[in-house]
Image 1: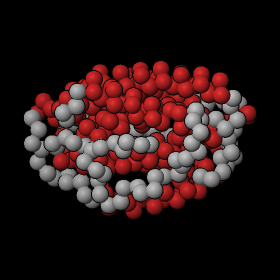
Image 2 (image 1 turned 45 degrees about the vertical axis):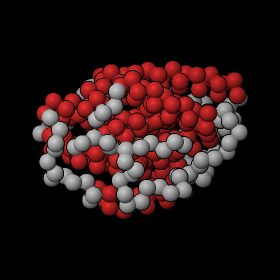
Image 3 (image 1 turned 90 degrees about the vertical axis):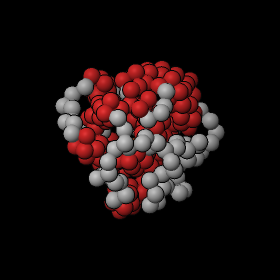
Image 4 (image 1 turned 120 degrees about the vertical axis):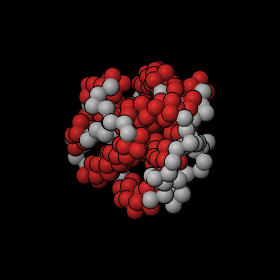
Length: 272
Ligand SMILES: [Fe+2]
Ligand SMILES: [Fe+2]
């Protein structure tokens, strides 16, 4: 990341307003999760889902220190604040997973190699690349959350649908940041960056399919189908994020962020 990469980080007020309004929406949605319901799933499926949630709980629990300190160098308080609110939403996801683990009687993990690799990669890289990694993980994971959102366990279903409503918007947030980050980057360099991101997305989808395959199957999704759908979601975001098309929108949150409902029955929207 060089000075040349610094985007015009103005215009993030729309995101700050979205994240701030989300605080009340989260409270309403969290109240809809039936924490005390009895699970109809067999013990083996619950164990597979609990192992999977443990890894996601760990992945979402970071305090964003590295990301926020890189962002501060851009000297744009509005952008900093939007990122801070984004990190806070991720920490809420971690808390929701933790609450689900308590229900399963499972302890959170203190370390896992997939999280360690992701954190190490992020620390080595600049802000723009770190945001690209978030875009990869979030687009790829949406299909996993959608599968959990169709799971027969009411708590897993509620938590996953609640988180999916955020992740759909987070993908747009990352695209907004990347579009500005690549504002002054020549097309050949953007193509190269997009190709590298595609390779990483394929690797991420593969690791997720292998590492969380048992949980996916417990929720009725084959890991192979997950892999195809996950890359299709990333493929939709890629040309927008890397400015490979002429379209100048999304940007900002979607026109109708999910209101007081826990999303549509575990579906990822067909458009970014
Ligand atoms: Fe998240
Ligand atoms: Fe997210």
